[in-house]
Amino acid sequence: MLRIRLRRVGKKGKPSYRIVVADSRAPRDGAYVEWIGHYDPMVDPPAITLKEDRAIAWLKQGAQPSDAVKRIFDRDGIYEKANSA
Image (cartoon, rainbow, N blue to C red; front, side, top):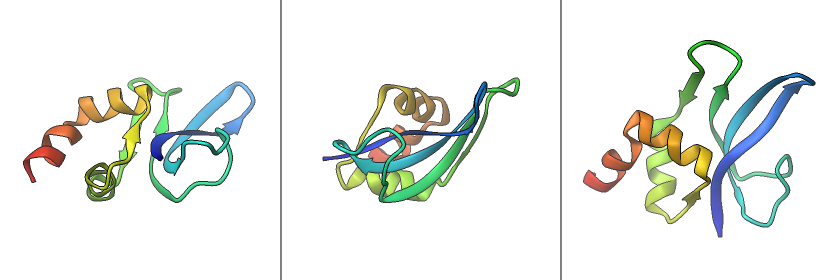
């Protein structure tokens, strides 16, 4: 099963995350299928860059988002776009 989840990058104490599509059995920072965005929680407000078309395509193919990614998608309205298209 494929999951859309966060992959930690960045220095110690200064986390930054990539939003990736990965196999659910892969480790957090392990191999991934595709990189679809970036999340930086250290700025105010948190910066999110997302390839919306790829996120919608993966959701339509059955990829399940993690809880954190689900909150990001809800904020950006990705679920509504995936279900309406």
